[in-house]
Length: 189
Ligand code: 5GP
Image (cartoon, rainbow, N blue to C red; front, side, top):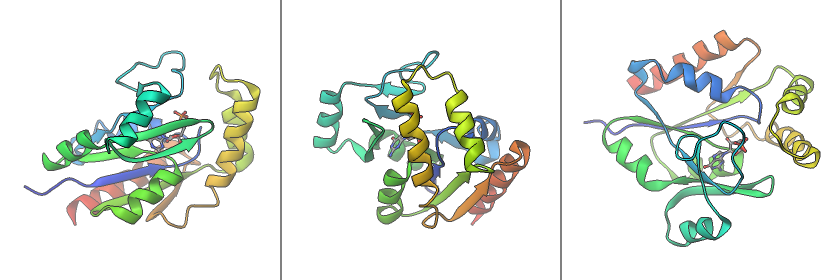
């Protein structure tokens, strides 16, 4: 059986990555499975441990790094985020295509090190619109953290050249179809 692809899916906070993915997961042809990351950030309202993230302490995260449990990891806005290696390998061996919804530092590690990957970056129609979305989201985070996310988004938008595909989410339905087309093409290669 053909080993599944590793799909690196990035884009600044608030760009709509989650919405696009949720829609594409319904398409059985894509055989997408979502890799649940480990993070030290606190859960937002409605987030469920083991579904959105594995929420862990800094001590546990450091232990995971030390034991080589993570395929990649990065520090982002004062917290750590990383991809558990075991699930990714297990699913790819089964022929499923594993999606990593990760930021640019982690993406760089994957793009440099791994084989059979496809990388996609989602951009907002404009920085102003993105800033409004990040600020408008009721995340329960402090103004300082929200401001850091806005700055981080600006920085990420300067790092898109390493990705195979850059897709603009100015129209959600079109962005979904663009990502679907890229994935179908890569899967059939
Ligand atoms: P949030 O706090 O908004 O859920 O995530 C912040 C950023 O971290 C987002 O860009 C998200 O895609 C990214 N992220 C989530 N999980 C991981 C991971 O396992 N590794 C890396 N490098 N980034 C991640």
